[in-house]
View 1 (cartoon, rainbow, N blue to C red):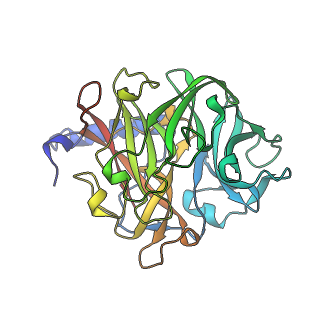
View 2: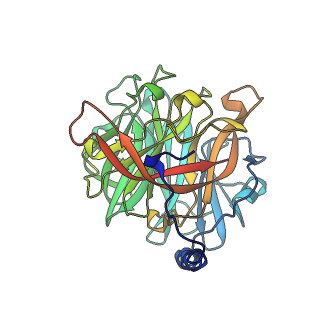
View 3: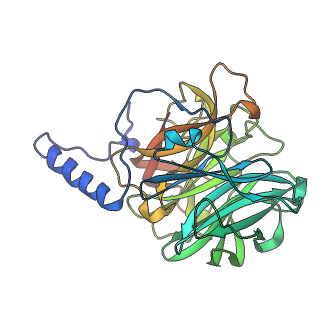
Length: 366
């Protein structure tokens, strides 16, 4: 049941509904986005036993990237569901023995493909980038990103908001593994951070501290809502636990992305498998445990192509099937959907600025 703070986005009579739907569909097609029809409530488990999906669409082709065989591999297919069966083409190998290769992210910028990934051992994990004119071949040697402060960093990705490139990642404040925070830095180009790093989220709410040692905010993904406001959707709680879930950071209208108190956090998980940690009005999953480390499947990986209000749009995430022992080894890639959910109030207390902010949130579907 909807609360007054989570009312439907539109409420129209039957006479005007066809006209509004026609206009909405025309707007969607103009953006090049894929609309997902409302289907049965079943989980879209793929055959790919893996973690940390990153998927974009370029034209009619879906492109994914993953950590594989001590490096980075790319797949291409005609739909998100078909990616698991597509050949994995190795585009980069760790010839310098950097260490563990985690969570590559693919985007396009200026007609080139950029893949960002973390590599290292223990406290040595840092962010690297490779790039190419082609999605599945011809990539450069890796280049370490000179992120401000030079601390442990994983799960980074590039996006552009209001004409400014930004890099967002999960990292440590210092040199010890106490908690993972979400940081932002400006970028002067896809490979060059500039200025300071800014913390925009720390795992300080009770629902994101169910699993600790360390406490986790990670795998941040940017998207822009129909009002033009920036969101960073991230994973909370440890990925080694079925408490893993997705939560939202929403930048207030006209807010400064570098000012932590201009960001409002959802009051619980928006996509998770445990009712006790879900935000009021959001239900836990039916078919999977610990959904997280998602990818909004956007055209060219560009948040300027973020979907309008109304229909559902493609999403990929990893999770463990219910009834299966929860472990990293049992994670699969899943196809899902998401849609914008209007008039949603996020609340906070004992911090600078207004205690509430109302705007779009996100509903996720298996």
